[in-house]
Length: 320
Image (cartoon, rainbow, N blue to C red; front, side, top):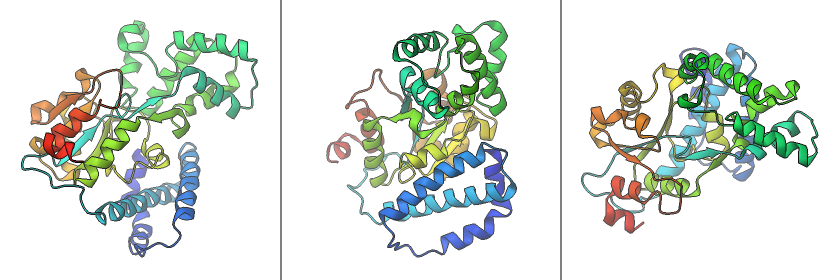
């Protein structure tokens, strides 16, 4: 949320300083990580309900602390291999379709109805799943599939959380699902860790790249905060930043979002690689000198090999 970033300028600072003074050797181990995972779920719920300034500062401080711990853990390990001259200093990662994908429509509907306390016979649920899929749920539809009256909201959805919710409500209305009391649960499911599946090959590639000293950032056209999901899927150990369109009022392929990602990492675009699955959006940084790799569809274990070769060089990638 925009408020989360703004909180760094006020009440969050005092708490941040206390967290960064913490001893790097934390004996709590696994219980500590479990506690942080539970706290992330609480944070996400708080941010959905018009949080106070104090709540925003607390959540901001927690994520700063997670990043600080992750950075220590990664840098304490020796690099897996030396990067050759000319290797990428940073890799920018698209989110949906690249690092992760939404769960199936059946999983989405079943999970949301369970959250809402609604029980539906299996045969009826299957029929409603097909109807939801026909309306473009759970992931939404592309512009070519939308009627003209919905196009303006569709284009705003990644820049404005209210427009994002409005587009989703419109799809739910079109699907005709008979549980108005479940609308909130159906929407929240797409923004929860339970609703996303991380590509195992993407995770392995991120580990390899980060241990080789390459910085990683998610650059996403999205209308809501990804950081709780990154945390709950244990990705913040490897990902050092998250640049989201709604948060900076710029969306791919606008070069602005790519330029800002490089600035935050402190790297030049010519030393940066962008990885995505949609050429029309993810190649926007090429005007700045960013190299781009568009992943093949469907996914597979070798899908990320071109990324490792492009970032590290074939010889280094083969020796991982």
